[in-house]
Length: 532
Image (tube, rainbow, N blue to C red; front, side, top):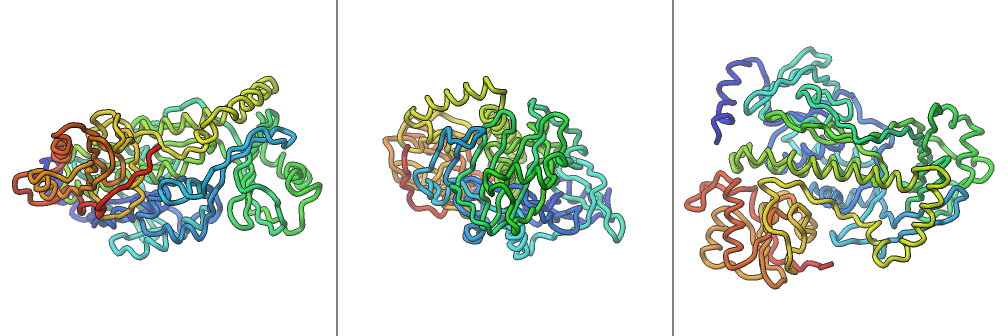
């Protein structure tokens, strides 16, 4: 254990004798904060969640997540309940201003390589309630609503969090703080981070509707590529639907939500007049931004979700990016707090997630411009280019791909590029067969095409690393507890070199280790991967 980490329990408590102690303080009880608390609890880490609002936000926001994020819900043990409140989303249709189809991209199958839908539609309040109900079963987590964080002080190996509620002012000394407090993050301000502008800013009107009126529409997302009024329409779930309309410069929401104007906007779906049972659940103006924080960490204080990055919605990755943050950080922080992983592992969070999030945000900006940018001449060019591209083999599959970009390079994303059939995923990408076999007790796993040699088997046991046999002509891949490929090696000593990578981040030693590098080795005995 580093000197910096070891000083916390004695020295810092002496300086804050009246402070409550918590392993982790999580600021914000939205989906990202709740998922982070649950993942930490599953790995034996206590947390206190501080939430300013006294009740969950009741109105819909996020409506989409992909199969990688679905697997995070599976790891939480809520995937069956999520399936009951969501529906598979079959693809996307592009239409022009007259609602004539320009291109349609359909998924070949509902279930993808992760064993779940590649894209799912849901209503965020339903998901939040599901996550909160699940959190209530975790006694390691204390949720305090009506708690307003007033200051955060980052210390070596710890942090001091002060907050106020109806009973007064309080102080918590924490081993770590996770800032999951959204776009107007108090935690981000506390660590002195700033948002880097990726040059996108548009105002859109979002309208959520409930109606039992039959809307005979395809179940995919409809993108209206009208240069004068770009819009998006989607059936969410059940009787819920969403429309998004871009606002022109100088235009306000009130200009479009007057009853007669709103009826005109929705006429392509409902006809000249809105049915009597159409209920406007809400309409709100959002400013879609493309921003990434210039730093995500100060000591043991971290930024996650909208506190770290904000994206336009065009590829449906806003919420998913935040849940990926939590999934990336939770196992590392748990390993460090348990004394199983070295403090340097925490450096890999920003190194991996910031480049990944930046690429995702830039992709959303590019897709947004491709679908809605420009005026009449650009719209004509878009229509002609789409007509050509849709005839290119594999183009539709690429448009609908849910594959996430690779994580940034770090001490846990390294090694050779993949050239063999085994573990064809590059370092930093998810290994589908491992991620799909979600388990909170999953540790590091080595996948190779042979049974380990006796010395390798002993080292695997000592370090608590699982082993699985995969098909391939050679090589071995190290898969992390979050399902990402850490490294791929080839040759006779491939497994040994991968074990050395685990050793480099572990506090255990191959000769007589006292503990494992994770909550336990993977429960997989074999992997049969589908190659693409």
